[in-house]
Length: 65
Image (cartoon, rainbow, N blue to C red; front, side, top):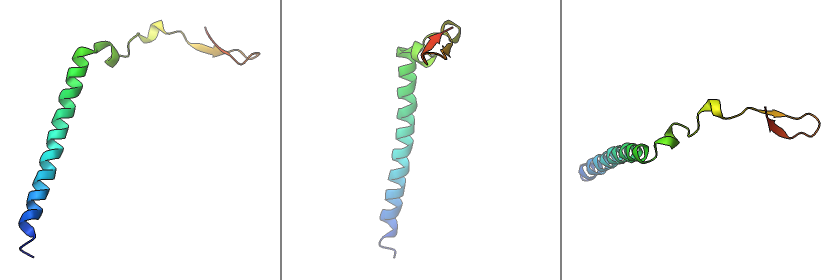
């Protein structure tokens, strides 16, 4: 039993470390993407500029209001 215990601790610490590194890298990646492409994070065009669509009951085609 004692023979397998130390490697198990090593594997657990390695997995925990890898998870922490992955989380830090993900946050940094998102921060850099937000700096490089700011319009994509805000949705590009503002909501007021996008026309609402209504369905034409006769043809079934959606048209802007």
